[in-house]
Length: 109
Image (cartoon, rainbow, N blue to C red; front, side):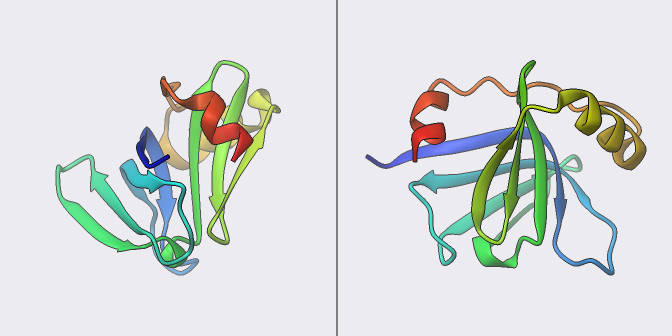
């Protein structure tokens, strides 16, 4: 089943030596390291690149968990307090929760 996954209010690191991007990430699910990801910045510029080029992406799925893309894989963490503090340090605000209608499908994949 191919659906588009979009995570808004994300922090995206493309290199450990550069500042992160702030914006949204979209990709076709299921994804692999060669899948093309669209990153739309808060300035409304869109960059398309392979998923493998993302070093780390952090986004808040809901009030109970954060999502991370690391090494082309999707991870979830329920330590919301920790991630709220970390994202506030990086982005100067805690990330807004993303509503995703196919969240259950993403978690099981």
